[in-house]
Length: 531
Picture 1 (cartoon, rainbow, N blue to C red):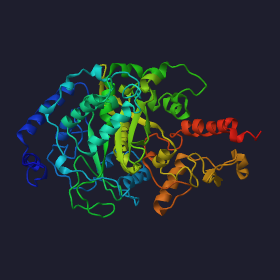
Picture 2: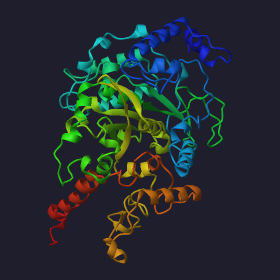
Picture 3: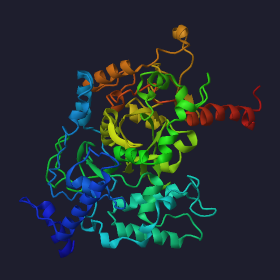
Picture 4: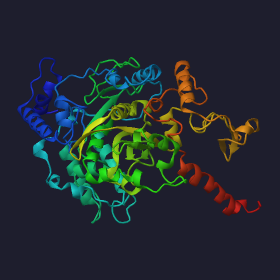
């Protein structure tokens, strides 16, 4: 680290009253003025002070370990009680679950080969005089409606989304500055055949993934027990993890969270978004199940007096899955995307209407209790209500998570159930299943169970309340109960059903499962001797 950089950051580690550099004081003053000008449009109440002044409006910066300019020390211990007021509306049992989730640590350890260390000397904060000429582009140019998974260039083997995910992972892991990532994007564009679809500025990258005026925060966790340690600032070296008791190195791994509340606010600033929310009232009613609106849970919330009968209240659908970086490596990234169910399908899945809520990266799969913690806290806040000004009227918008669309491995991690191929691995009933030989290995099947003929050949169906009871028992006994290994955030989120809210993985279970197997039986020549 150069002498200049050491001097610039010295106030972050000064135990006495911090003295901010003059340039930082000027930025804070400018951001405060900008924030005051915006209060006529939205009443932002969920962040205060210098942190919100810097982060809420900094749409071009990458999050770094020193991204908070508040001058406050982070002790490196978990802020266990920071979200407790959010859980006041829960009953005693759910409050206990929330408190346990906030303090959980795990025995499973990431791959020892995972590189979690970062070079502190490479940490650099964004500078206003380093901004690129690309930042003068209009917002209309940012939100193009090109195909979501278009190739990087003609006949390319990699898509735009995969390329940007790789570049973001590289930038966050190596703590690239704003200017460095901007130059890297231009370099990649120059090296690719022309024309190409490379996003040539950081602002365009954030626009591709979602709303660009949203706070991006790093959350640090213990690499030994996955316990959440702190946000924004790297825990200090030598402090002790409250989960496993081991000393921290000061170079702890982290994941990225992007403010859900701010992205919801940004969506309501778009006129076409507010207009499209009327789709649920205008769509043709049918007895068939054509959309999420035709499901029993949605209908219950949509009836007169229900939460979703209000024209401005919304429900969200969450999706997350691992994206392999290289075929020869187990390193992957796990983005969290959310969509608004009340929009028409075409608008619902368009990039400028999607919410990009977080990113986990590394050689180990995410620990969902830790990864989803900041998102769950914001979902409680969104359910309590966000105050906005819409059509010159002050309204309170409430939002809930209604569904989580996940493949089988991610579903087990989210629900904290036994893996899909384990005993009681079915996410919808408590049938144990049977292990049979399959090829060179074994697989678990669920044949018709004559003992439960009155129940259509399987054991009893799972319910949300039963799952919650089993989760508490499993958490206390440290042993799975009917396939439930412990508690998860999905058990206490408002109006979320951890069973009905996680639909069947249609692509893998049906199209690539049953249908593929039938086609193989019908057309593979190795089965030609069978009728």
